[in-house]
Image (cartoon, rainbow, N blue to C red):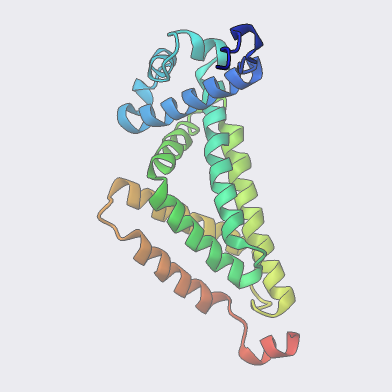
Length: 220
């Protein structure tokens, strides 16, 4: 019969301090998103976040320093989830195809992560406050989204898929404004058919951007 292995010989599998810190941050970010969806901004206190995440009442304050610091982290987390899904859906596509793929990704993301969309919009609304400490994060996110959309237009013009007379920056502003408007309406009134609205927007964008067939053939 084999003798039981002494406990001292069994290697311990303990998480590192960095791993514990990352886990605590993840739990508190998720707790913040849950509270924003259920209690709103007023009910999302640092104490409530720490308790919802299963930690001491003061850990959120110790970890993030302030609500603004925590909200910046939440916005970064939600943005990272969206960016990963967008990149997966684009799969190397460019021009008009990239714009349509991005709209599909946006629709799917909104339907799969409505709690993310609601939390983000609640925080964005708070950025209207002149004293908001995380307003620069919101401004930067919007700028990057517009630049990405404008780059899709430029790539489509280079390949011949998109008309040359379309102003990339102007389109990007209107494109992003349309998405934000659809988001807001759907979050406030879930009876709105988001998929149908996105499909209608895709149809309108194709009508607006698509280059004449002869030009497309000439550019290939």
